Amino acid sequence: LVQENASHPSFQNALGLLIIATVLIAGIVMLANLVQTGTEQGDGEQSPSPPSHKQFLFGTILGFVMGAIIASTAGGGGVLIIPILALWFKLPMSRTVGTAIVIAEVPLVTATIVYLTTASGMEQVDVWTALWLALGSLLGVRAGSQLNVRLSDRTLGILIVAMLLLSAGTMAIKLFAS
Image (cartoon, rainbow, N blue to C red; front, side, top):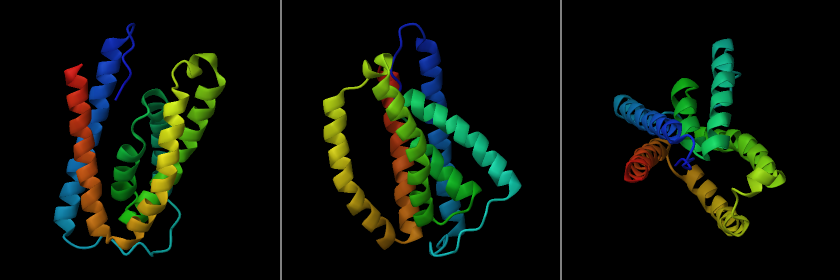
C-alpha cells in the first residue's frame, strides 16, 4: 500500500489507515446503495449531463486530493474515484468505470513522467517489472472493456463492491503485518 519511509513511518501508517478506511467506507456505502435500490442503477446509455456548480467544485477538490494520493502512494485511483462517480455524480456503473479510467490516467501519466525523468524518481522504479506488467495490462484492457459492456450495471456494481472490500482487507492485512 504505502512504501515505508524510515523518517516518516507514523505518517505513512496514518496515510495507509486513512486510505483503508476510505475504501472500506466507500465499499459499505456502495453496498448499501445496491441493496437499497434493488434495481438497475441505469442502462449506461443515458446522455451525459454537465455537472452542477457544486459537483464541479467538489470534483475539482477531490481531483486534487486523489492526484496527490495517487502520486504519493500509487493507490487510490479506481478505489477512490469509482465510489465518488457512482454515489455523488450518480453515473451508471458502466459509465463510472470508463470515466474513472480516464480520470485516473491524467495523474498516472503525469506521475510516470515525473518518476522517469528525475533521478530520485528513477531510484523508485523497477523499469523491467513495470514494462512486463504494463504489457500484460495492455492485453487485459481489451478483455476488461468488453466485459464492462456485457455486464448489467447491478452485476458490475456488485463486482466493484467486492473489489473495494477485498482491496480494503488486503491493504489492512499488509499494513498491520508490517
